[in-house]
Length: 423
Image (tube, rainbow, N blue to C red):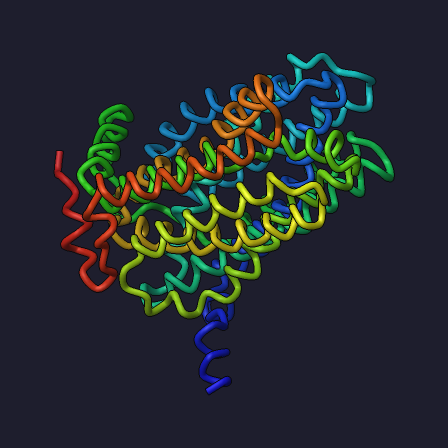
């Protein structure tokens, strides 16, 4: 009985063993992810130390959002017409240059906040293109029967970097400087460059040379016709916009918990620690059918845990509740990714991935703006608690307004996904 339970929870590692390209992709993503997550701690911490303003710290999200939107939509069209491996390499080289510029600015003294906003926007744009290319590559590195396991593993390793990376960032800042965290980020991006260079070519299957704007319209049209996709995107956007108070982590750490940079790293890592544990025990999801219902339940748990964490006065209690939230987010993410990749044919996968990436990446940025703005006119605690409760309310609305998403059945994917219109 116990052995059967453990087997149902354990992650299927066969994609990593059987596919060289998938293995290289995961190794590269893990190495570069460590540096990226360290920089995600450094940037808001740096802005808050310079400005002492929760609002200006939250504006990082706005600075990142505009280039992220444009780059994501463009990236989807490009990823469906060129070698996705080459696109991945070019993006990582751009990220090396941007991280090096952040390091130079930090070592030079106290940089103007507007410069940090500009570099943050450039990094967000390059990262969005990189994320689209990498996401579109995964389904072509493993056979269809291994896809759900590969997606779980990909998300789990990403979350593992989000545990180690923020902790590493907090330690680097405390022991050395903010600039050191950016240097580590720049060097780590070279890991993905090397891994992608060693992979086989990844051209899109059935690619068509059509005008970019027409290609983007086709991709958006495909997404619009599927309630399964719309529901997964809307619920994630609501969860991250209202319930991801990452811009407030340095504020809470400094002003509420008096824990400085290390506390900022702890709070950031706590969410990802819970997500990692959950992602690496998602064997039971390989046979789950009603993924839409699982997503709604997981997002509700996420919101309640975030709201409860905002009420805490002890940093370890808050971190524990953020761990619970992260675990719920992990279950939601694996299910949402499975839905989106399963209903999408390869020749439109880059464009679907661009919308997916846009939602996943813009949600936390909108959350930065929302949480920072609410905290500026009320208190950080009220911002966190109200945001978590808004997540729960969004689950109810999505469940009522998008019944096909709620009823999504993994055994009936074609009926819910719908065909791609030929243009």
